[in-house]
Length: 216
Length: 216
Image 1 (spheres, rainbow over the protein chains, first blue to last red):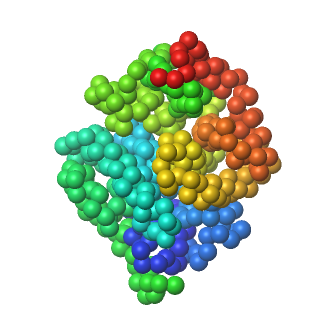
Image 2 (image 1 turned 90 degrees about the vertical axis):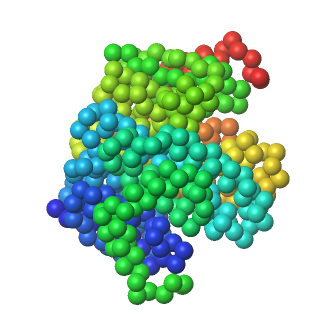
Image 3 (image 1 turned 30 degrees about the horizontal axis):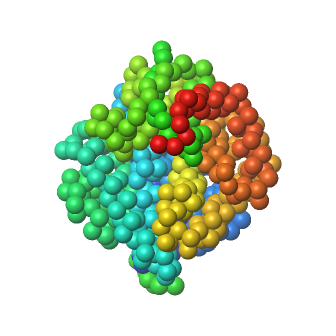
């Protein structure tokens, strides 16, 4: 069975390497799930909103279900494939816990950095609140670094879909120096991004835009 | 088996009815999972951080695993009990999708309202950005209202853990007029909160603070 995902046919330079289809591609590569990509130009159309109510990407379809939300899609792929969710029920629940932590306890703080630096960079309040946004994110990263400690992955020796999501979220900080205070977190992200499945996913993501202009 | 959750022994008046233990209590009530409550005064201690890296509540423990993240805990309870996750694999995946959507595509926008109105109310930039924060949240709510349409619950006739989480997140807007533009969403939240399991969960949550002062 080949799954189908949707993502953007084009994004501006600053968004390349960050679109959330990477998470789904990465999960597919980790478990060997073949997938086809349907490229769309506009996610705000009624047709696409029927698949993704918020007019975003990616979406996913397999032989059984259509889904949106990269977190739910990654979990779906992990549940149907091998390697991203442990067999042990407790370890499995903790993998889901870290996936949710990435999406709910870390990503919203990462997003605010992009809001002040990028999406609302021209707003008069962004410069004013930048220090607070950075300090709040440092609070989260310090807690996460302490939880990771000297472990290889968040739950120990085994990479899970929870790591996949956390590393994807932290990847949003790639163009900042936010991780430089946390050598263990920086090494953790590098370790995740060095996985062959991530490299393939990122290369395929970037290849989409290889022949397109960087600006609109 | 009786599960154990941790939550705060005391919160100020404005936080009563909003602490995330309600989500876990609600899930337990829906499936008939007995639980005990361990009340803590300070979530930032090393002891509590060993259970919850970000120094927050709730946490959860059953006979098999200890967890944090209300989303992951609700999913755990749903998976072990009956009634919150459909048997049909596709419907089940969509229930998880809506849980993730609540936590990643709606709650961060709801939180920003609390940030400008409450947590950063004294900051000079909060008044400046309030209109944008409200407008952004309206974008999310309008999309969600369109996705709900005239259905009873997000996936149709059956209440799931996805509804539980979405209604809990939207409950964060209780003291605002944000939902007044979306009669179907307001009715959806009211329908969820009228469920006996939610009423019991909320009553038990509020009873914790019945004899304590509203301010520190």
